[in-house]
Image (cartoon, rainbow, N blue to C red):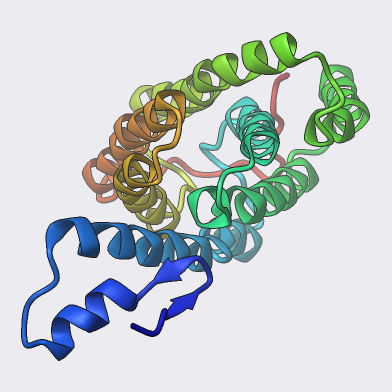
Length: 242
């Protein structure tokens, strides 16, 4: 039997079954589907935050967006990506984190631009991240601290969504939040639970995806509920508190 492997995906078993006129068995098909879905998530992640960025640029406004929520998201992606790199997981199991991190940093930069003037604490948080991120991504920290950081990233992602969820509830509006970005975030978290289980990723990785389903799903629901609500008149200059 000739092996058919591509990008870590083994098509040998599935093709052999099909040639024999049989439907591939579950143990043969599920790992292949998991790999394919994993790469689909990675491909889709390259544009997941683009709708949100474009919406802000189009309206020149960050109305209804929580700066802290997006800052914490950058921190969470940084820790999660560093951990997956450190653990040597297959790229299909975490590849989207690299693209999401890049887009999240760009998104925070755009939010900063339309949130002038920036407060002192905002500058301090930004500089602190720039100083520490290379060390974390390079895995140049104590292994025990690394595990603690990864354990905390679930709380970070959870806390990143809470300010935005609360702001949406309080304002009865989702402002400039993008429906498409929120939808892709929710779908990505849902599919990632399946692929993580198939890739035998640590349960902590699966837990992170479950949290993503709950929080992203909540924001998506708020967008659908509040999208018909009349939006408040935006001020000429919007200021964000630290």
